[in-house]
Length: 79
Image (cartoon, rainbow, N blue to C red; front, side, top):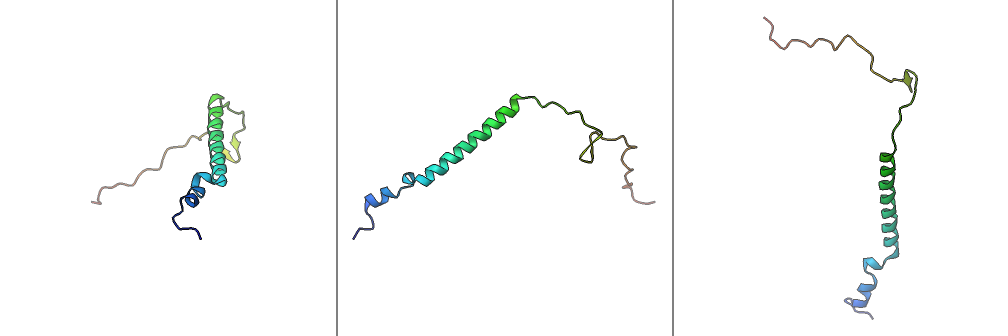
């Protein structure tokens, strides 16, 4: 019977000896590197404006001119 404090059993089950953990670390690092690469690619290319009509998906492209915001109610007490 093995003793509960067997050093060989503890070192065999150490976290750095688990291949699934290393696979997860590798996938995470590759995902992070891909995100950094995509951000670098996006920053290096200019975003050219598109020639569109007056609306895109029903939303106006620019703000329309209006008369201004409605008047605010007075905060003075009534006389």
